[in-house]
Structure formats: structure tokens, C-alpha cells
Amino acid sequence: MNIQHLKMLKILDRCQSISKAATCLYLSQSALTRQLLMIEKELGFSLFYRLHDGVKATPSGRYFIDQLEDVLDRYDRAVAGARQRSVTLPAQLRIGIYSYLIHVVPQVCMAAQRQFQGVSFDYVVCRLPETNQALTQNKIDIQLLADCSEPLSSNLDCIPLFHCPNCCKIPQGHPFYGKEKLRLSDLSHKQVLTLPPDRTQNAARLDQILRSPELDIEVIYFETPEQAEAISLARKIPIMTLALPSEKDCFSVTQLEELSAIKLGMIFRQNDREELKPLLDYFQDYFMRHPNDFLPMRPLTSSS
Image (cartoon, rainbow, N blue to C red; front, side, top):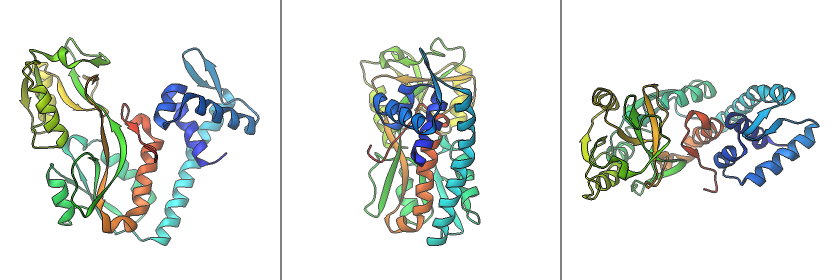
């Protein structure tokens, strides 16, 4: 049993489903089942009850899994401490974030700050296509959860982290509130809030699709997430967005079937890769260990 097996058990416990955990881990269900059986054989006790609708930790499994958080945190601190002694991070790091991710990124950076004592994080809200320019001009050090489908300058590099579906954020009181999936045709002859096409490559693609004459959708642009939510709640208009966790119960996130997912990741200067490697590795590991915080985004493994 190795550290990846322990992380796998945490993910399985969060998902409470072999199929969902296998999807998060980019494994087949049979491969995950084999690994689980191997771990249980090594430990000498069953970790999970196999139920018709998923899995549930046994009393022994519950105790064992509850201890893993401390074990994994200690492991992370040990790795981070060792890396700090081999590669020194800058005392101050500027993290570029998009405005619609402003409630997601700080929690990741606060966890990183506990691992890398003495390093402070400043947040810089960036708009595309400003990201490349901000990195090239040394105004930020890392763009976190950036659209990796964006064309990059030759001196920049990207590490993908997530497959992130395009979704609709549906306000409470709308007929589609609570639906798991929609088709674009369901939005025909209706109003939709979306980012202006000059903000991201993904926004440009969405704008082109939404303005298709066959769909006849009335597109309304918003400037900030707060403005979009205020308009959406007041006028019961869906918001086109990426599948990010919603902070408010008055919205549900509904996946759009025809739209392909995009890859979100970290963009940074190629020359800084070695210096930032401990932090880049930490971010990758964090997103793998906390998939439920970012579902329905799916973490990418190194083979994806």
C-alpha cells in the first residue's frame, strides 16, 4: 500500500460510489475494485460495505479513513518541508485569478500557505486576454484555474488540472431549477446571461454557439459574477458559466449536454517552472485530494 492508495480511499469515501470515484481517478471500475480488494487483504479487514446504490465505510473502515486526513496532511507537510529545503520559493507570490473564481482560489492558496510557511500570496484579478500579458510582464507569477485551451505566448507553460463542463446556473424559481441536464434547444427563445466574447476563448466559442439563428437565444452580457447573479435572481434568467461550485442555495448548476468540457489549469512562465515546482506539485495534489470541493469538475491525472 502506498500514499496514492490512501488518497484513493479518501476519494472513494467522499464519492461513496465505485463508478464516481473511478471517474475522478481516471481508472476503470474493475481496476479500482481490484486495488480496493488488495488494500483490504493487506489490512486484514473490510473498509467498505458494497451496497446496491454505492459503498459505505464499515466501522473499521470509518476509523481507518478518519485517520488518513492527519496522515496525508503530515505527508504533505513533510514533502513540502523537504522541497522548501531544496528549492526556495519567493517570499511573495502573485496569483492571478478570474473574477468568477474569486471564491474558489483563496481556499486553495490558504491551504498552500499552511504548507509553505513564510510565503505570502497576493491575488490579482485578471481578464483575458490580459493573462498572457500579465505573466509576460511579470505582474503575476501563476494564473490559477486558467483556461488551458487559450493560446499561450512562447515563454509560458500550462499544467492542466481539471476537465470543467460548460453549464447553466439556474436561479431558484426558474422552471429549469434543479434539473441535472439541459440541451441547448431548451434555451431557445429565452434570455441567457453570459460573459462578453472578448473575455475568454471559451466565452467566444459560447457566444458563437448561442447566437446561432437556429437557437434564437437572446444573449445578455454581464461584467461581474455579482452583477450576473443579481440580474439572474431578479429576472429569472439562466447564467452560462463553467461548472464551478455555487456558494448560494438559490442557484442550481445544470450541465449542457452538447457543449464540450474545457481544461482548467495553471499557467506560469517556463523559466520559473523549477523554482515554482514545489507549489505547482502541491496545487496538483490538492485538487486530486479534494475533488468534491470542485465537482462536477473532474481532476486530471498525469496521463490525461
